[in-house]
Every structure is written in C-alpha cells, then in structure tokens.
Amino acid sequence: MANDILKGKRGIIFGALDEHSIAWKVAEKAAEEGAIFTLTNAPIAMRMGKINDLAAKCNAEIIPADATSLADLDNLVQGSMDKLGGKLDFVLHSIGMSPNVRKSKPYTDLNYDFFQKTVDVSALSFHKVMQTTMKLDAMNEWSSILALTYIAAQRTFPDYSDMAEAKSMLESIARSFGYHYGTAKNVRVNTISQSPTRTTAGSGVKGFDDFIDFADKMSPLGNATAEDCANYCISMFSDYTRMVTMQNLMHDGGFSSTGITAKMLEKD
Ligand code: NAI
Image 1 (cartoon, rainbow, N blue to C red):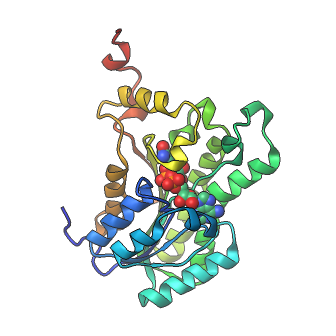
Image 2 (cartoon, protein in one colour):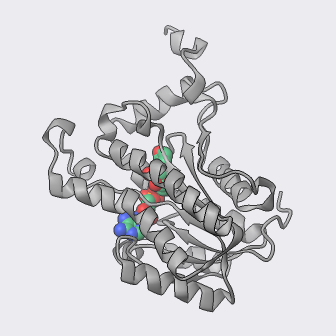
C-alpha cells in the first residue's frame, strides 16, 4: 500500500514499547512511506521493551527521553534535528501511564501523588514536547503533531480512572497549543481518539477483555485496530491533511456516534 506519501519528511515517534504498541505500527508504516525519524521512549521502558528491533527494521536511531523531563526533551529534539539533517515534519506522542490504574486504586480513593504523575506523564508531557520544539524552532511550516487519546475524556468509563482527566487535559492542550502553533508557524496539532486496542497500556485497565468486546459490538465498523490507527496517523502526517488542526479526531469504527446496535441487543 506504500505510496511514499511521507517521502522527505523527518519526525520523532514516542512510545513504541513492543510490537503491539500503536507507535510501533506507526513507525513501520512511516518508514514504508519514505519518512526518516528517531524513536524515543523512557529509559526504563527501553530496558524492558524491544525498541532496538524496531530501530533496526526502520533504520532509525534511538534517543532515550523521559517525556516529563525538559532536559531530556531538549536533548531529544536537538539530537533528532542533528541526526536527521534538518527541522521536523511530524511528531507522534503515544504515551500514557497511570500509577493509580497500575496499583488498582479505586477512583474514589486516589493517591494524589500518583494522580500528579498520571497527568505529568500522560498530558503535560504533550505540552512539554511542543514547548521544546517551539523554543528550538524545530518544526517546519505545515508540519503535524499528533497525540493519542481515548473517549473517556468525554464520557465516563469508570475503570479508566484518572486517565480520563489526563486525556481531557491532553485534548485541551492540543486545541490551545494548536492555536498558538498555527498562528506562529502554521504547525498543526491534533489528537486521535482510538478504539480500545490490545497493548501494554490498554490491557492495564481492569476488565479490558469485556470492555473491548463491548466496544466492538457498539461500533458499526467494529473496533479500529492498531494498524488502522497507524494508517490514520500517516495520513495526518501527510500533506493531504494540511488544513486539519486543533481537532479531536474520532477513530473508533463509529462508536462515538452510536446509541445502540443490533449486536448489543442479541440474546444468547
Ligand atoms: P503502550 O504501552 O505500547 O505505549 C505507551 C507508551 O508510553 C510506552 O511505550 C511507555 O514506555 C510510554 N511511556 C510511559 N511513561 C513514559 C515517560 N515518562 N516518558 C516517555 N514515554 C513513556 O500502549 P499503547 O496502547 O500503544 O499507548 C499509546 C497511546 O495510545 C497512549 O496515549 C494510550 O493512552 C493511547 N490509547 C490507547 C488505547 C488502547 O486501548 N490501547 C485506546 C486509546 C488511546
């Protein structure tokens, strides 16, 4: 399917942990479409994950960065421009983590230090990435910055816990920064709201298997896979979507517009 639609484009891809990660699929497809990019992840995740395999496959260099650290981000963005030979055309923020979810804290008994960590890793990091690229004047005109989000930002899914607040903030940051980046540099900023997907982050949510099945039945097209999501990301990095900015783009097989489906009503 590759058509070189990202030929000549340079980027940074955050969040590829293993072959299930959405960012992993985006990296594979970006390479197929002719892009060059650096891969990054938190140093600790790098020891656990398989990012070296992906880097070899995509001919990409790895620059570790904790996305909550401005010093790390500065090093990453400057290093990426140096290694790739110029300013950037795309950035994928594919990062999420809640210590409250990990430690199964009920929503009505949250640990607030954990909550702050959730927000810092899953939402503020997006602002930090963009503030860093802006200060370093690292983005080309009409470049595209994306983060991945989930519909729990708009509707309550109880076991998503404090990640819901983080995703609401993430989407708001995309709108606010999108205004400033668009006005200043014609850079576009969007979030893609993805169906539940079997990945390390996704599977951390309690009752995930039932939940993924429910979403599938409630979506006229079924759940969007990680590959589908990667294809959408590629189109958003391409020049075919130049005028799309400050949007939360639903990528969910129709879930967000559906009230009830025949599949949901089927009795066994
Ligand atoms: P994943 O677990 O493969 O990716 C999450 C990544 O965040 C990992 O690579 C992890 O190392 C990275 N990360 C965590 N803390 C970090 C830090 N301090 N600095 C840098 N990186 C850090 O899972 P997945 O599902 O591919 O997640 C990617 C994005 O997609 C996340 O934003 C997630 O919330 C979002 N998403 C996932 C859905 C799902 O059901 N899997 C549904 C909708 C959105």
